[in-house]
Image (tube, rainbow, N blue to C red; front, top):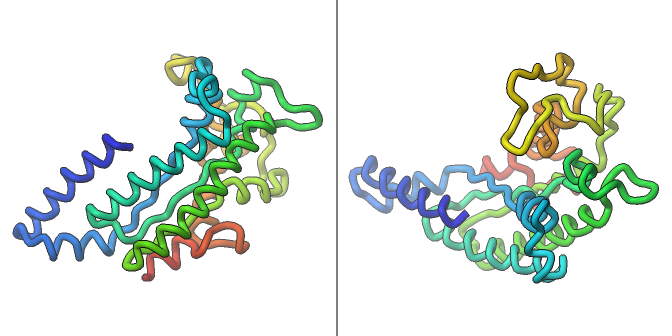
Length: 231
């Protein structure tokens, strides 16, 4: 994310130039923009629990998620300094249910997911929601909101929504991506997962819809993206 912040700083300079080098006009323009950010999935699913889980040797789940949130807080404050004022922060989904991690670690007893990985995800998500409250208290001319993808995913009645395949992938993958010359499934709207790590378009459409317009109070905190955009 640090590299992305550097890239955004370059973009801000370009926007300022387009505004006649008027920094006030550039900041006013940026204040109307909507920023959506999601980190944590790779940090937990790859860095901590991946094939070479080096971070798990050095940190407990509690320590590692605290470290992630501390770094994230600093990065978000830098983004604020660059002009961001409307920010939607997406929590991490149930990555312990992804075909990749279930294949590597095996599902927990009585579960279809790796429950201890999802428990770590919730450590991160709970800290992220608290961070949103802290940022809203500290940076009062900005508005941050937390999108609770984990709970949105938990609440879905997959069968009622037309999903028929919840534990297999539509596109077979190798370490470098989709396997060449293979044909993805034809009924991709019935698959929860596109590949071993990522939800299908059909799943993401549901996530996006509830992030934009919350169906329950737990979908977003304190407001959904539709409300954020109207500010």
